[in-house]
Image (cartoon, rainbow, N blue to C red; front, side, top):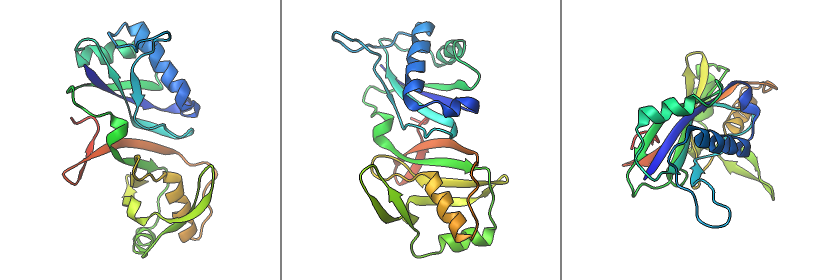
Length: 217
């Protein structure tokens, strides 16, 4: 059996790295005594794959990872028992049983929503998005190059006194919210604040040309 778990990561836990979060869930799954599947061999480990590592310092209410189980587990029970062993800043939100032929979430990931605790003038956002290109310097471990990020920005607007972004996210195309914020601040002629709260809201896969939340199977 396959299952997908949705969880939140907020507060001070946003400074904990991806590998530590993965080890944390391995521990609470053991403590919750869920019937998960282990790999074979000399060093068995839980068969688990996280959708997308969250950058340190960013909060989230829409994180996912996939697991395999030996039996079908009731979603309500799974959420309840896992939250009995976790901390307030990491909460299991949903447990979704998947069909046997379901692809891993990390393989189908196509987009993500973010909110930033800043707002911009509506005219500034419109003029920013109406540019023919939005070029930024993108750095990797091996090189630096100018790239056009405009096609990777699906939505950019003020919502509830915050800046909302819907961005391409996945193995095919990937855009970090910090790059968008840097470019927008530069366009607006202002310095980006040294500390600004960012939250990942949801992650999506693509179906029939539409973005669908990973929790919807």
